Length: 116
Image (tube, rainbow, N blue to C red):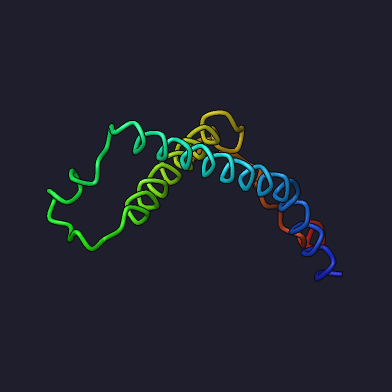
């Protein structure tokens, strides 16, 4: 009985996590594609040249694709931060203040009714 109650409470707590994971994966793919095309455009237009990186002391043996992938990674990380920040601002779970005193638990005890 206890194991079943714990299992049901765990499933209720995780409800909706699959959709959040799918949305996060789609956002990651869109961000990666956008960053890839943005970096290609920046390099093709000459806004960033390899000379700028080589002036920083990076050896000339480092190929162009390494710089491209590093910039893509930084853009993707930045956009994921924006996504998380948006979740914190827009989601009811993200807007909930920590430390707010309430008689109700977010994770109820499965044995709460058995001892009363």
